[in-house]
Length: 88
Picture 1 (tube, rainbow, N blue to C red):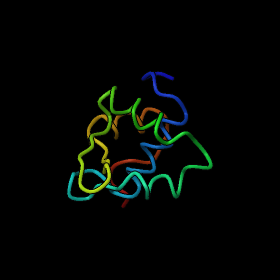
Picture 2: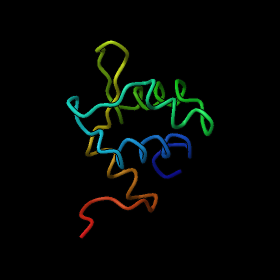
Picture 3: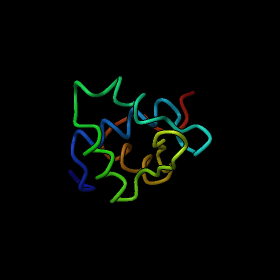
Picture 4: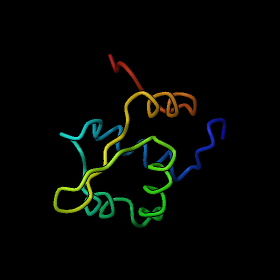
């Protein structure tokens, strides 16, 4: 990968981006993420890796909630051919 992200990490970023989880006010709980993606990837491991690399952030409400950092996420997805930006 050109930016050092695995396919699982890109899938997670794409999921958060397409669900518009791009701020703390529009974050998604870890339980909601696991409900959708647990069959395809190791959610906890991928989330921790993306946290360490600075692509996502989290905060604790009742459970941990996660959201993508817009700039790095859009650049990474764009470099790998995912549709980002204006959808007109």
